[in-house]
Amino acid sequence: MVHAIICNLLKYCYRPVDKNIMISSINNSISGIQAALDLQSVSAGNIANVATDEFKSDVAVVEAEDNGGVTVTMTKNTEPGVVYDRGDGVEIESSNVDLASEITNQISSKSFLQANVAAVKTADEMLGSLLDILA
Image (cartoon, rainbow, N blue to C red; front, side):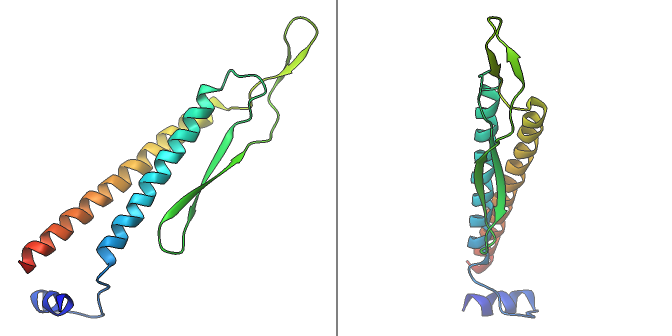
């Protein structure tokens, strides 16, 4: 019924409209928001431990899901840190956190978050306009 009303209002209809497309686009954007927050969290943890000896940084990778959303998988970076002598003849491995990479990750995940928030706002406005048309 809603599909027929939309087709009549717009005077064109080339293919069936998935009635769940608005909700799925919002869900996809919400998964993007969660992924961006996960990326921020991993990077913040790495930055907090930049001076912790023998700390191995976490690596977060965003992967696409079949439904259009995204997930974040996390692994440990196993590369060794710089080895230094602490002064009493004992060598210690420093953290393997690359601060420049983490700052870059923070900036890109912030943009990722902003884009997904904007997509949710746009989908919300479009859904509101559609409901206004149908009312």
